[in-house]
Image 1 (cartoon, one colour):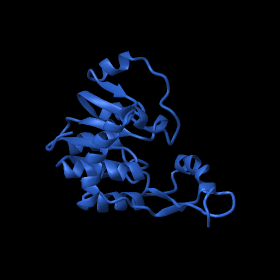
Image 2 (cartoon, one colour):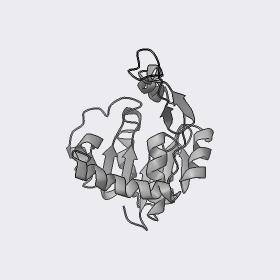
Image 3 (cartoon, one colour):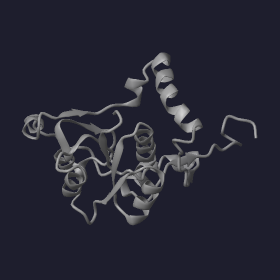
Length: 198
């Protein structure tokens, strides 16, 4: 996304949402973010977002249209899934891109592909890291975009929650209930059974 445009980021107060919005800010892109609570909205405004929508009490489709002067956004990044589909499509401008990269509320349900044409000749994609970073050169290219933002202070992870490897198996359940904000930090454990000397 180039400067002057706009994006909608669902669950913008989560770890991936914060990083994505900060990356968009560094490129001069207007960031519209949705959250489930005031606390998460405050966090996202502090870190990255231009406009905030609390979708548990606001009609986010109407608010996106209001913010964009009725045009909609060219890209929606959606990590929520079932609860926000197909309404996320209604936030897109014609020929816009729906990027589904998570499913904290469950998977996007099967849908008739004709829905994309009915809503404005839209595109839909489900990217994975392992496809985009399938080899060393691709991984280096992605890293060369991200890490300069981090070292320049333009992208700051907000690690408010610490998990041990024993806790990590419960992380998907935690994401589904959406009690946390920011990115979780995995703390290594050393000692008996870890394979490392303590």
